[in-house]
Image: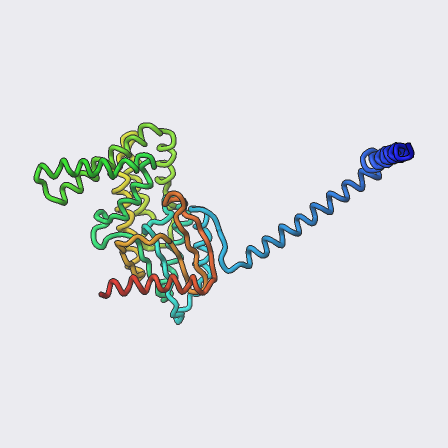
Length: 330
């Protein structure tokens, strides 16, 4: 009986304190002020925490900087901060899958990148650009062809392409044609077929992409040979066609001609070009002090970018170039 009374008293006391708490904290203006003050302190602490985390992230020697083409401006920042001193012996090293890296995704950033590289070269800095392709004719390069295929043929169709290509090659060999004819014909037929699927079945997306890549560069350029005007004229040949008549071979030819113009331009500025026939799964831009590098994501165009001052990474990039140069010299 005594215990029962104690329990009852406890419940009553608890109810009274609960009511007082609700009145002070919830109902009264004083309680409201306390609540606001509490949340303000929490928010302030959170901001400080986020700020501290951002400071830590920025101080890391290697950090993530976005997905292609978001980091193209960061490449230009790296190049703009690079010393223009002729006496500087450190090479500026670039590895890219194609010479027109980013040109059809962010033309302004690409134009700035090319101008930075040519200015650095004209100031006497040694620059090496290694890009993935076979030596000689760009059209024969496996990597160059695959870059164009991946850019314009839907992923589900890319999986079918090699199978159909092999079957077509087997049929063509029966006609006793030359090896070059067999490969060229098979490539042409299957690429046009699956490009047409994309063009005809995804008309809105296709039209938007065509409009994006054919957007002209600024007509004013400080380059005496008007590189970007030449690229615009190459684009114009494709732009003059109705969208529904544009073929894979048109886009391929445009990329090829732009590449040739860039080759001539870089060579005139004494930038060393090394065409590769080995696919390296990293693009990078290094000035010896910092490096920006990117790895392919799920698809080649979804490259994930990082920037680093880590000496081990900088040395790794130098070692990659040394390996490429030793293979050329053998």
